[in-house]
Amino acid sequence: MNSEPLMEAKNIILRRGGVTVLDIPELQVRQGRILALIGPNGAGKSTLLLMLAGLLKPRQGDIYFQGKPVETRADLFMLRRNVSVVFQEPLLLNSSVYENVALGLKFRNINSQEIKVRVQKALEYFGISQLEKRSARTLSGGEARRVSLARVFAIQPQIILLDEAFNSLDPPSRETIIDDLKNTLDKTKITAIMALHDREEILRLAQDISVMDSGKIVQSGTTSEIYNHPDSEFVANFVGTETILEGTIKSCIEGNVIISVYGKEIEAIGDCFIGQKVYCCLRPENVMISERMQGKISVRNIMEANVTKIIRQGFFNKLILDCGFPLVAYITVPSSEDLGIAPGMTVTASFKATSVHVIPIKK
Amino acid sequence: MDLIVQGTIKAFELIVTFDPEVLGITWLSLKISGTATLISLFIGVSIGTIVALTNFFGKRFVISLINTGMGLPPVVVGLFVTMLIWRSGPFGFLEILYTPYAMIIAQAVIATPIVMGISLASIQNLPPNLRLQILSLGASRLQMVWILVKEAKLPLLAAVMAGFGGVISEVGASIMVGGNIKGYSRVLTTATVMETGKGNFDIAIALGIILLILAFIINALLTQIQQRQHLR
Image 1 (tube, rainbow over the protein chains, first blue to last red):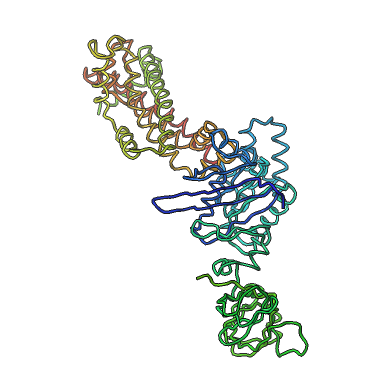
Image 2 (image 1 turned 45 degrees about the vertical axis):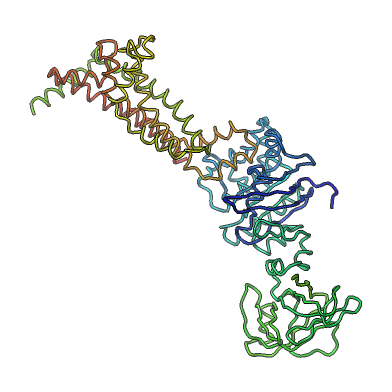
């Protein structure tokens, strides 16, 4: 990671009607990184994006851009010239695609020759060169979304903010737009902050994550840190840790811990003390399912499990298991069919001690 | 029935032969109402846009006032403008009572709230985030307002039609502040009133038809522009 943050928010407080909508002591955005803001509806993601874009004034606190605080009207204008938002709806003007993509460049009084070059490049990024002369009013939802993205990339701002920009698109359009966006971000190295919902999209696009809840950032870190080491039950839940069990530390020797959960024992890696109450978190993709107990296996946690429910999720089956405690596992549909998995069947569930993430329960 | 038929025939005669008096009256009507509409556009669109884009205490009350103004009775406007520019009134020194200038002022007062109300509604009807999107693309405040007004041009054309339609057909204020002086401040509506009073139905019908044709041409023209924009 680079040392100097490109943008920072410090001690931000925003209240609306007596309710604190945002309370962010610190947020740093580093050059060239892609940060995902995730959290439930109403967590304050969109409000935070508007504030970072200089479109909403905080009641308290400061935004720093390239190390300098945004204080005067001129600073605010400079911020808006360097940070551009893509909203949930495409918000295109009633003119041609070319005119729409050229809009931000015209505001900057760039000469028409350069505008042409930059617009064409931006249209190419999103595979819509053929739409150049079309009226924005005649575009499909996916095309309009591509135009709105091209419009922002044509400006080549320092930071791009995306506010759930893929909502209300059909899955194939969504897929290809995300691909093009990812490629464009890779090529242009533009820093981006995105409010996202979908876990797969987060993994595909983002390098860093800040999890928000009720106007606060509850955890920030790299994608793998947040996914594999959530530091609260809320974050674990939000990033799809399907199994979260309350337990008590039974023994702890050199980082190897044994946790008692519903009278059963789970081995994990962690730094705890005996008697400590903890959450045992396990991602469903880290649970392996087999027909019977295998002889030699390096996995520390092996147990018999009863299949109580099977839920089809795309190419995967989500298995709800009972091993004396509830456990959730994913298995591909073909594997599930090979093993003949059905409700009531007994299978073997296994997972590594390193896959178990332990969160101390705060009193 | 005979009267109507004869009147209509005479009317067409006057129109086809380009009767100089009728032509003069028509031209003056266009000049006065056109100028008044332009003034109302300038004031109405500016204030309407400002009210739509800013938040201030009592905004709803101001919008109610503007909406009420859209239905201002011309005679009431005539009365107030007359009192203001009456010889002993606050603007008496201008000496414009019974002149086309006074008529332009009165008609602009009538048309301005109509244009203002429609502009305000059309700017408010734009998607709420559009303004933020434009600012976020790096627009200055002035550039943002200009783009919004351009985006709302379809309803704004309706505002022009409503404003012009309101003043070209208005008679109360024009008679009161213009005086219907032959060759000087006589317009289509005031002349129609006078000719009807005198029993010259043929001329009155001719003037009425011209008024209708005029209103139709202007509106047809603006509708053309509006619909072409819409289809684009």
